[in-house]
Length: 128
Image (tube, rainbow, N blue to C red; front, side, top):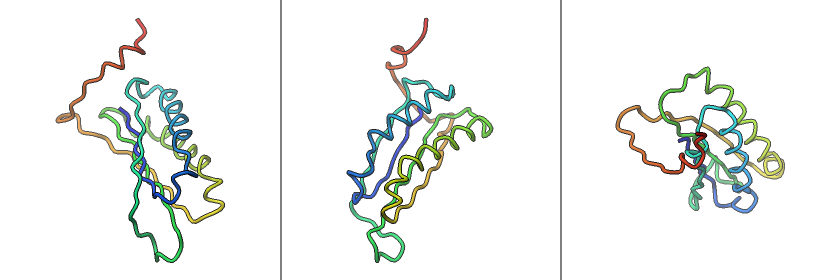
């Protein structure tokens, strides 16, 4: 963990430049000190069917969720989430300047129990 999940309307697939955003998100999350580098994942779910507002324009939206494991306080998360949303707004600013676009970000904390994981990538980044 964390997992950065993006739901994005298909009408901005090229302009969204999600690989570049994901690279910046990984650096930010790893640099926060709250999340292990080996657990950071980003992915996109492209939406090809949607309705937004009155449907009269070619609206677009990007909804992002940061799924995290249990154990961080709101005081620890608030600055990271603020920085993350600032990064997202900067990334999408050129696109927002040329079209109708809605951005949203939420954090979702997974339960402490009934949450199963196995990952051998952490060992690659472990400092012995």
